[in-house]
Image (cartoon, rainbow, N blue to C red; front, side, top):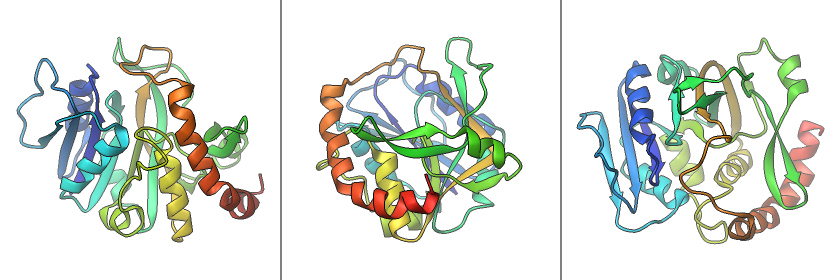
Length: 256
């Protein structure tokens, strides 16, 4: 079974994201909507494959993901944002071609949340992990690798947005444990924390181009937004924690 965790905070697209998951999954699935200190209006649909976890106070994205994983029952876990749509059979396509020590992200398209349509913009495949402006780890679109390896459908990549990923629950328990809030803060750098921990444990971050998801394009309004001042302490903590490992081990491996 696949457990899909959706950390949610006042996003009106949560139900539509749940609907897309229910319509496109072909295997056994449970969807765990983690309501981070709020109740949606209207309420979510009553569906046997949907479980709702309500947090009495706002914990932030990291705490909400941890809460969802803690009650999950599937062999596989997936995290997605609350404003996404998914390719038909995404669950089976990824889980049937996954190693125990992988984190997998699908090909990423862009969603127009008003029309609820995929936008006519090329998808994102490979991303390069960089230190952006000396401030933080970030994923950077990697066009040269995308072109050179266009026919390799399941391949290693260096960074992901973090809005949709899958792994075995056993890998989460063994390597991730939980997303750390001390230092990182409640919101940012979760994908980098997981990827660095995975690399250190001998695992890989993989891209599966045989399926896809589409994430709300940044040109549309967010339901919540945090500025640089709020994000900077977490960015700095992550950079200080992992900089030497990135510069001395990861960057040389990828020859960037």
